[in-house]
Length: 395
Image (cartoon, rainbow, N blue to C red; front, top):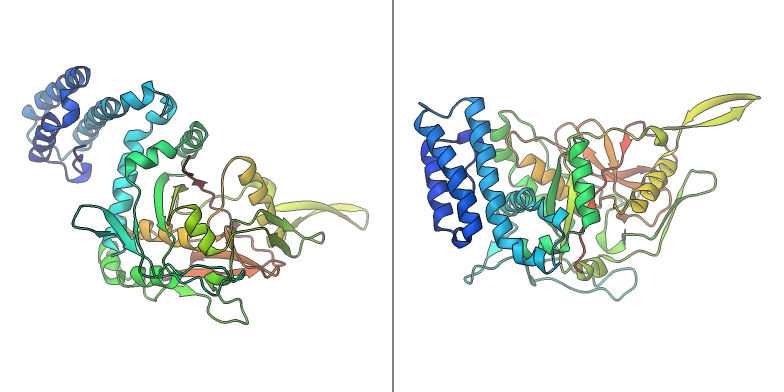
């Protein structure tokens, strides 16, 4: 599909080039698609011929909408047969244009960070470096050196269910800025961090300030809870607060090797990319009776985390883990302008959690760097949040 020109830099030449690409596309051969495109193209050509330039907000907005209409017509022609056979639900098709743009941006970011490579045959992949030989169950796998091909957009869109599409629309309606994200799972966490750190200068140049001054911080002291992927519990089925609310009970999860194999090396998900999230009102405090009087007290971290996860899983959502949280930060920092997630708050990362019940895994922006670590399960963080996501599964 032709790539739409960036609106913020739109020129007459950009628009004319785009229209020529459209007329050369395979989808243009579809009679119904061609009729729609010709009509919209004529409207665009009439508009730009009457304008001196396109550097005004109204012009950009109008042309942008028309280009979106063309993209939708092309996508309907491209995916129409799959709709007819039931391979794609109609309410999923409505999001194809948006998700294809998300996919393109996600893959561009992965390439920019030096993660995504291209083979001679055009296939794109990353080279794994995670060795799970020392995992908890002793049955881990060494993925080092494996080239793991990225799923194409035509595959990904087939994994999206009507329920997933409904959550995407809900995130959008609530202003949570949902995006399609692809996370390479078979890389070490510290390898991903190194990719981000290598781009500090470029990110700062885009920001016009020294936004990132320090390398990504990942807990590395055993006395505070060293992050060792081989010892983490991924996607735990059991994630509950203890009876006194001061610790977590975590269990029945996957090793990182099992997670990599479950998702074929690529975690594809819908992630809300709003910079800072609001706390759910029912996950802030609780009412207790003391000395015969009712009073509200702040919920403990373990209680808040368990409540967030119970609700998320009941809605078909997941939390985030260290790997996908870091990729979300990298995507946000690759933007123009770059913006760090969790700038003022702290998100739990329950999908890659410690087996130590005294620690809640978490991530945030710490003044001038990305910080991955955790907090005491018995502490009371008023800034605790949960960045939920929707993980897409191969049917």
